[in-house]
Length: 155
Image 1 (tube, helix red, strand yellow):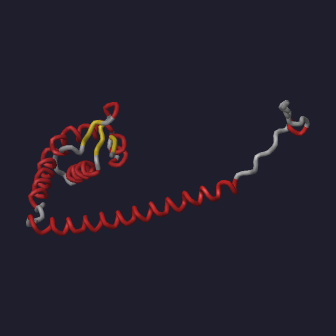
Image 2: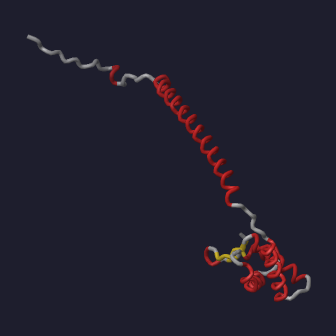
Image 3: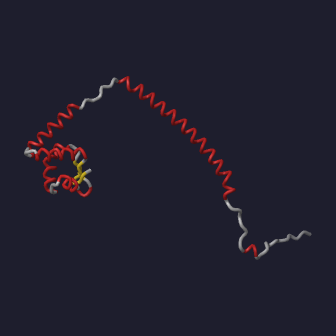
């Protein structure tokens, strides 16, 4: 996303000139011009391409209004040339379902392998943990004092 400052630097125009052109192009930009945080105008890559085309047409000697008309014609012809792919309803779905089933089966196998690996690793942790921990030490004071033994009197 390009800010007005970025567009001004890239096209060697002032911010005011960029704003004027964006205002003139606002009905052509159709969603490529957005308002960001703090009211900043943000232009997407497609919007910047349209803006650049306007600058090029103006440099070629067209007025701003005629350049916008040319751009609108270009955009309409591009949209008309876009043809949606023809798809028969039954063809793609069967293949797609088969592919999805294969992926689900492979993921289930992977999950089973991972569970086996988890069981093995947990067993290893339980087996090796006592070996890794140090033996409990006697306390410092036990060196100087003998444990108190209470003798029970039996009669």
